[in-house]
Image 1 (cartoon, helix red, strand yellow):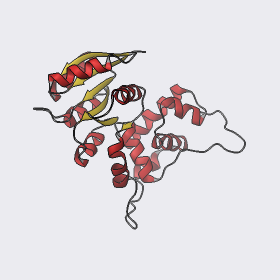
Image 2 (cartoon, helix red, strand yellow):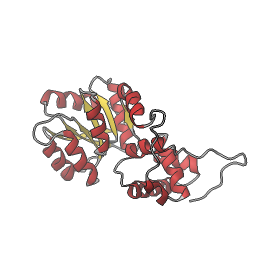
Image 3 (cartoon, helix red, strand yellow):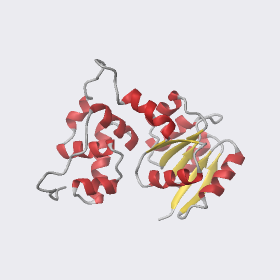
Length: 228
C-alpha cells in the first residue's frame, strides 16, 4: 500500500529536498505541501494523507498547534521533523499527539523507514532525545514515584495487556501476535485504550505505560490461547 505524505515546512528548499528524498522510497507518495501550520491543517483535511511530516517552527500557526489539530481530528499520523531537540519541543510535540520525533540531521534511510513505521501505527523517536525523554517520564527519582493514573482502573485486563504492548513499541500486528488475537481486534483494543485514557497517540500511551509500570504479558509455560 502506498504511504501518502504531506510535507509541512516553511522553507521551499527543504520541502523540495524532502520530496525528492521520500519519493526515492518505494511505496511513498508526496501528495501535498504546506508552508505553515494553518495550511498544514487545511491540506490535511483536503488531502487526507497517511502521514504529515511536520516542522515545528513555522510562521503563524506553529507545528505543535498544527499537530494537535491534525491528530484531534484524526486526519493523519504526524511525524515531527525539526532542527531543534529542545525538551520543550519534544514534550510539546508528543503531548500534542505526534507519533514520532526526528531531527533533520537524520539520514535518508532513517527518514523513509520512520515514515513507513508511523504510517503502520508505530512510534518513532530520535536517538538523541530518547534517553532524556525516558529520564523525564519513565525513571522518576527515588521517592518521587507517582501513583498510576486513576484512568487505568477503567481498563479491562485485556486492555491493560494492550497498553503494556504499546509500552514496548509494538505495532497492531505485533500486539495481535503477542496476544494471539486478530489484527483487527488489536486495532479495536488500541482505539478503546486511547479513548479511555484520553490520549491521542500510541506514543502517549507508550509513555504512560512505562511510567505506570504496565508491561506486556509474557507467554505462559503452557503456551498462549486464542482469545479476543
